[in-house]
Length: 112
Length: 114
Image (spheres, one colour):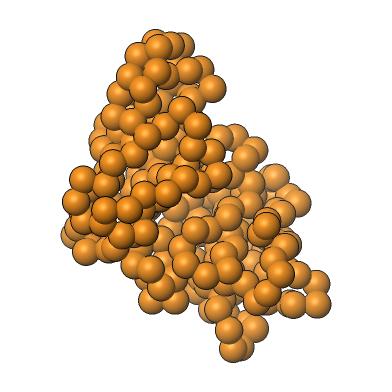
């Protein structure tokens, strides 16, 4: 069965600092991987996705993620965080189709 | 463009009461999903409908039923609510190919069962 681990429940960074959110997945074959963001009181919005090809994928709002098969990881990065990036971030995996398995989320706080 | 619309936004039920959560999408998507979100547990799939006329169980289906009324609408019913069903419920839709159509989420229904 597929699974996703987000080891950091909460992360606090200063505005302008770089950010990396960790995601490790378990899946037997090549996975489809996603990062979603959830602002308070809202549904989830897709940041970026990886299916195949270039292992560094670019998303919206200046985010990027790198797929590392050897480490079963798909970490999300942003060079310079803005106060508006404060939200909860979810990593998700599927082997195909849209039955996604989500991680437990990482709550990002941005200090001004 | 409304996307995925969920009603109601908030609901409080007493144990044993029933209710139906409504979901409609206007993107002509084939597939629709119901997730629940609980603190520290992420989102878990309750039921999904790959296409009109079909429904299947997800990870946590017990205590729920669904109806795919037509291509646009997918409802979730709690026949006899329990406190363990206190959660935030999200409806989502997509086409079958995640490469072309990732999940689009509604804004959620916050349900409290007392």
